[in-house]
Structure formats: structure tokens, C-alpha cells
Amino acid sequence: METNIRFTHQALVEKCKTGHSSSQYQLYSLYVDAMYNIGMRMLGNKEDAEDIVQESFVSAFKNLGGFNYESTFGAWLKRIVINKSINYLKVKRVPVVPMEDHEFHLHEEPPEQTEAVDIKKVKIGIEKLPTGYKQILNLYLIEGYDHNEIGEVLGISTSTSKSQYHRAKKKLLEIINEL
Amino acid sequence: MDNFEKYIRENAAKFDKHKADKEKMWANIAGELKTEAPKVIPIWRSPMLRVAATLLILLGIASFVAVQVFGATNDESQYASKELLDIDMHYKNLVSYQVQLVKDNPNLTEEDKAEFLSFMDELDAEYEELRLEMQKNLDNEQVLEAIVSNYKQRIELIEKLLKQINDSKIQDEDYGYTL
Image 1: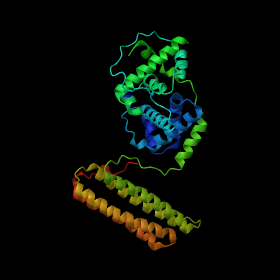
Image 2: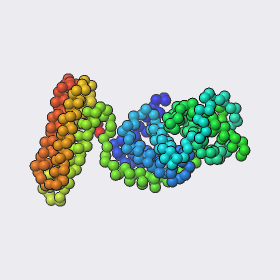
Image 3: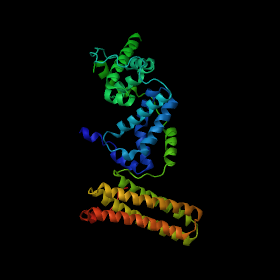
Image 4: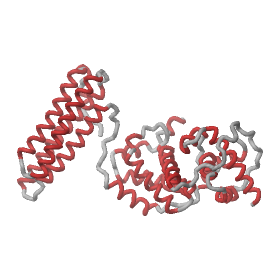
């Protein structure tokens, strides 16, 4: 049934393509909180998150004709929010990846045997991460992107994404263990 | 993926802790969307179909201008604007039908496309001149007639092109348009 998931809210999306405003509002209502949370995770403050999410919905509705169910509408919209967030951070010259050598780890590290931890501690730990670590960690762990997708979003290679993610995760676990 | 990563990904929804200011954000989004002209769904892929789609927009603009011209409150002008709307709808349907036929016909050479586009460009330029004339001479019936003639030429152009392609695919049940 996986192929059908892509067509979630298809009727609503099709109505929105014709510019039907109450359908646009319905679709917006379904996704606004999720998108706002992504914005908050990526940008860290309410005003920026609101601006980016608003821009993303406007952009999505204006370009909805180009959406042809290659992914779910939610995944498509999420990508817009993430791309806009990253662009915004780049304009503000906030590092979106750590400043250290990008190609330090060229091979994947063996999986670390970490115990399941308290989600609250993870949230606190992510908040405390240095600038540049948060985005890559959020994208992989919470947004569920793979390293190819992260590479595209951040404009880095897949191997850089892997190495930077491993660093970020290591740092996160250190912070959590100190809590 | 280690246990920690699996655990976080499985509980990703728990990281959505913020609630968006839904109504305030929607007000801004709706405001942005209202300032945009209605868009044709870009199911049109080829350059020629895009030009044809542009025709529909031009017809819309022209009918709007025409309605403004005859937009006075007396009965006669109301009748005139209704008549203009009917003419506009007639041409819109004609163009849409032909666009659909072209869409269904893949047997089109690059030369035909280029020729078609160059004629369309000429008619676009002519239309632009007429539009400017219309702004200066809002009550000039001759200008209006010239605009209608311009549309007719466009339709004729599409018809000639269609004849070149393949008449055999024209079927009554295909009549209609997608908007």
C-alpha cells in the first residue's frame, strides 16, 4: 500500500491547485503545526520559524501545479520548509555544518551501542549543541532524511554528511551523559 | 542505524512540542495569495502548450479590461459586458479544446514548433500594442475589435498547426478542457 501513501489528501490537493481558498486553509491546517515545529528546530526562534513557514506555504500553494505526487504532499512541503530554513541561515551566515574539516571521517563508524535515553534529555541535549551540529542532527534523526538528501539540502557530499552527523551525534551523547 | 537512532526516529513525533499561531499565520499567507493572479495548472509541458496556456491568461486579462470598459451601471452596458464575457468564454473554450488536441498529439516536429512560436510572438507584440492603445482610448470600439481579431488569428494559427499534425485523433468525447 506504500504507493497509495503518496496520494494522501489528493482530493484536497487537487482543489488547492485550482486556487480554492477554503481547501487551501484545510490543507494548511493539517500541516501547519508539523511545519512550524520543523521551522523551530531549524531556526530556533518563533519569529523566524513563523516567517519561513508562511513563506513556505505561500510558495507551496503558488507552485502546487508542479507537485505530481512523486512524494507525499507533506514530504514535499517539508522539503520546502527545510530548504527555505537552510537558505535563511546561510543568508544570516549561521554555519549549517560544523566549521572543522569536512572530510575527516571518510568511512562510516561502527554503530555505537547506546541505550535508549529519555526523550526530554535528548531535546535538552540538542538545544545545547554547538551551532552547525543541530541542523545535520535534526535532519537525520528527527526529519528522517538520509545522507544523500542531507547532502542535497546542505550542499555537501554524502560522505561529509555522514562524518558530520557522526560528530554531532557523539557530541549529543556526551551532553546527554553529563545531564 | 544503532538503537539510539532507531529510538529517536520512532519517537520523532515527540519532538513536535510547539503549537503554531495558526490564525495569525494564515492571515499573512492568505494576504500573500490574494495578491497573486489566478494561475493555470502547469500540466502543460511543451513550450508550445505553454504558449497556448498563456493565451488563456491573455483572454482573461482582455475580458477583464473589456468588462471594465463596459462596466457602467446602465442596462445597455451590462448587456454589452455580458456579451463580451460570452465571446471570451467561447474563445476560451475553443483554445482549450485545441490545446487538448495538441496535447494528445505527439507528432510535432521542432520546425513546426519554432514556426508556431514565432507567429505567436508576433501576435503577442501586436496584442501588447493594442493593449496600450486600449489604455489611452478606453472607449475605442475599433481597438476592441482589433483585440478580438488578434485572438481569432491565434486560434486560426493553432487550428492550422493541428491540421498539420493528425486529425484522426479528434474524437467528440475528447471535447472539454482541464482547468
